[in-house]
Image (cartoon, rainbow, N blue to C red):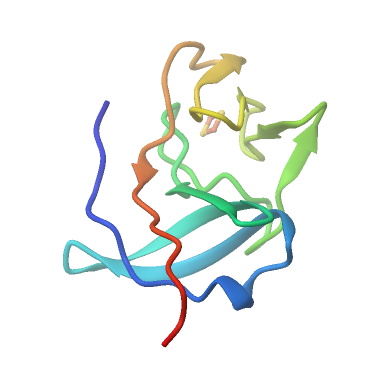
Length: 107
Ligand code: FES
């Protein structure tokens, strides 16, 4: 599975539960990320669908979620939110590109 190097993010910037979007510098480029926060557990993926390379959100930071799965706004690919694997739609078996996140105390 492909991955990219991590980036510094502020945990306080996100609601305690759910999906958000942010842009960060990764590998020298501005990248949009999908951020999933469940309390102190935070996961992130590039906001790029493996089907056709489109953003997953229908507007910046606005994600479709159905039965706990992230649904790509372009053609409906459905991703489970543990590993980011596509489980239904046009790219079954493909995965979102994970971005390393380390939650650390401020200070
Ligand atoms: S670009 Fe996401 S399903 Fe086609």
